[in-house]
Image 1 (spheres, helix red, strand yellow):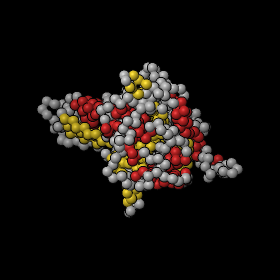
Image 2 (cartoon, one colour):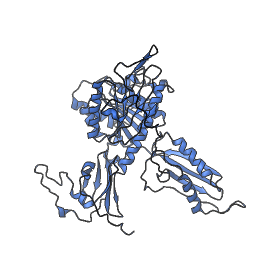
Image 3 (cartoon, rainbow, N blue to C red):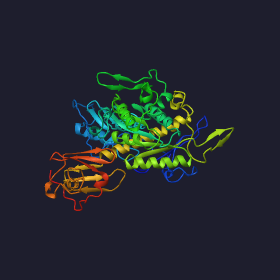
Image 4 (cartoon, rainbow, N blue to C red):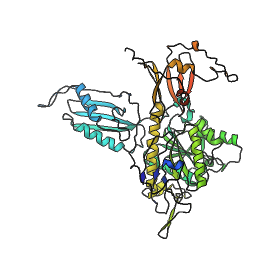
Length: 519
């Protein structure tokens, strides 16, 4: 299996292609051109897949390191070295390690933490903190860090430890309490039934768990929950914590599971508004704990449940599942448009049930394509990646898992740094995700362009906020991401402004950039 060129995540989509599995199926991720035209399977691969970037921090983030130094005595004949020089030597050596995706060194990225140097003994210890424990290149980082620091002439011993940040979303304040310790929420959607969406969701979740991540699965299909059929936990009933009035998820091989099918009700017979309420309750009141990834198995279609989830939950990204059939592909395109309007980036499209091998021949029941049949272990109660971790299907999901980890990390970095306030020039910097266009806005101009009901009469369209109501020297107190589509700006007058990226792009920009204010 190979990874095609990984492009921008917000609207363009990177995909994978795979080989056939032992049972005759193949699963793969398609070229982004597949969104408008079925991709030619003979198309040459754009590039081999790149390793995942495990932590994306602001390039301006300072290194949080605690340097302790000890006695100044040195071995006979060895040159004396000061604590400051020792620190610079170590950081310079670590700066040689470049992130494979963005070409930025690990020091500038803020990976290095808790540095401790005993220059008299030649001992150096530090920690490399990753965003996710599922980082595929964490072993490479550890090996290279040991290697480059050990080359320093005065260093005799190097101790590198690896860790990961506590799980939390980029914008924790804007999400329900039960989801504030989840770093990434990935929706797996098909917009059409019977294409293997649930199989992909379950196997993706257990692949991420196998990579070292803390993972949960939420089955959002109340009418026909699939999770109880696809996994076989010992305890098959959700429990209620009477004190906290929260739901305790079912556990299977370390992965937390919540499904209406585990509620003892089987499948629901109810109207849409009631379903949305049940989904909201199951998702937001579950005791998920700290999770690196929560995989949501979305129901078919693009209806109320999808809109409810996209509004209640800060979805990091979406993975779309389809088959080679034209009808299925039409539904996929509709689903991609839905996520696009909700500013949820589609990071992969899995084409399923493409062909099977029988009697030494390959058959394409739905026409030529580059997907696969992947439902062999769907009904056994054991995910395929657990039943056969070394098989071709597992390798495909390993590639998909790396793709998901990589793209979620990129999205977190892009969203967290999209809008910032530069105090030195008293201007708001805007770099909309997946855009190379960076521009400056005057804070007062942004405040005056608020379109909420407090600033504009909803019935008449009359501007209630007058020009002179906003001081020319006003400065934002805090700017926070709000989903993938906007930022929340706190102003000194107590007003909290929601500013969508689309609106910020239309505001008058600063042309004459002011000189940095004296420090």
